[in-house]
Length: 269
Image (cartoon, rainbow, N blue to C red; front, side, top):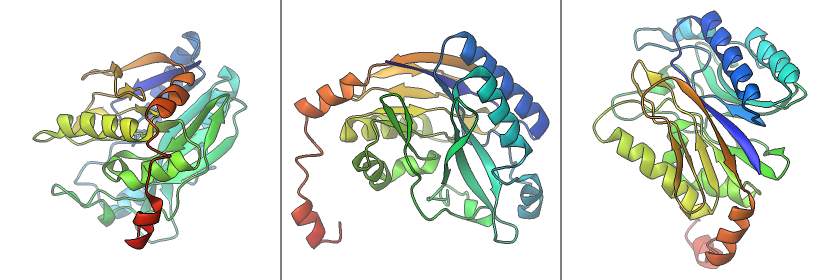
């Protein structure tokens, strides 16, 4: 059994204020006995559409910068894991990585995932400000929870969730800033449940709320049951997950074993 805290935040353009808010969420997660706390995408700051690529680049930091450094110190003091999303400096001029950083209970950085699929859809063009990553990230383990990482728009690409599952993940995390729009909450809920059902795993999806985002941070079990939906207010929820359910579901519904990889290979799959 693992206790996971999901933080639904409303980030502002003030990086220092967002960090202070995150540290308070860590303290709250600790007080509720969580093993780890997962934050949404864009924890570091809200980037309004009017913000230029150069301005966002000025906000970004390296993974070993002061923003993550403060979270590492707080994670160590609280003795719990942290998943935090930042704008990470990249080698490309006026482009940043959209990165999810895992910090363990000792305060050490143990995995960094850079978003693969940039949100060039529904009138947005993240590629004007972001540079994509080029690989999946190493899984992170907290006891029997083997955690794979995606970010937001990645949820629409089942290949990534499947690769992480085949690598050994039994919990998928998807920190997100899911943008409001027609049917977008329905899309969000459907994608999260689909990724859980097709891989027989838990999906934990902390989301931004306020500004242009939908809220509705969710946790879903391997049968597609919603464990929590935080609706549209800034708050923290702690859920307890039983990883034995993953094995039970995968034994009863052996989707991974029943794949026809021989056929897929013929068609580039």
